[in-house]
Figure 1 (cartoon, rainbow, N blue to C red):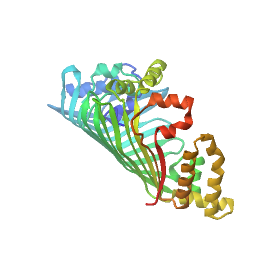
Figure 2 (figure 1 turned 45 degrees about the vertical axis):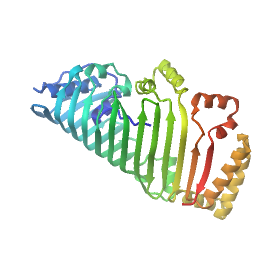
Figure 3 (figure 1 turned 90 degrees about the vertical axis):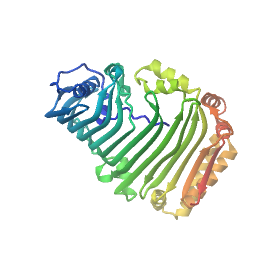
Figure 4 (figure 1 turned 180 degrees about the vertical axis):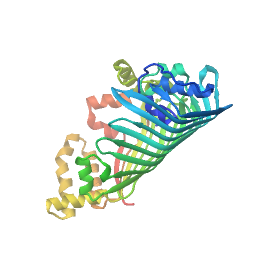
Length: 396
């Protein structure tokens, strides 16, 4: 699916989830561009904006020590920006602010329960929406900025219940926009670290510890495209690489994703039941062309099998055989003997020698979602055959 980050500014990304609360006075900067940028923040819900110092020249402005407050669902957030710089900036017709290079450093948004921070953010080729567009937006769909690229380094998320999630770098590049929707997108996240020491106490943390994990590192890459003329949306690459855990790869090709449907999706107010129902109706006209999911084991499957077979007091191969046998009765509820046999045989092959498992839906022609919904109500056991679903244990 085409990835559509809703802003280039990490600050606006957070403040965009806040309902507009009206403007608050700030000290004029002496720069048309600088004042307009602060007004954009206010239109997104910021209050009490202040800065330590500001310098400006034609087409550029730099802030030092920018602060403000936000309120979301009764919770107050403090915003801090060490430095913010706009270069190659100019107001266009319709009061849209175009910025060649937008930079933040030392950024954070913090409440008693949640904190997001970043060392730096650099966005290029940015066009911010007009003030009226930001004010008229709802919820997290307030922004509508477009940009060529955005890179965040030293990103970290933490919560009061003990979560700390650092990401070395997060990058998005977009191209060939239709209004505010990019037709091509590339995304990557590098060195996402999940440590058992930095997780909330609970079953998930304990499960990782029981499996012998102290720290897991992920990398993520994705590439997507959208053809507004044909309505084809394609995700040829979505991959999460988990060191010493597993790799997950997903790809798909979908049809029926018209500009009207995407506009409805990107402007949806989740609290508006009528909009939600209208969107669900439009989704009925989309189709599934193909879908593939592959999981490549690094060590997690072996760890689980070793752990469970030891608990059961039996050999690992016997545990696999017992597990597959125990699935025979539940599988009969699928009422599709051929598909049941495929699941049983391929799952046994995978668990006996866990390399990778691939699930694919490749119908001869696109299957409308409305047809799938109808089949699910009348004859759900026929869905695997309709989608030509295959499951295969790959020894690679």
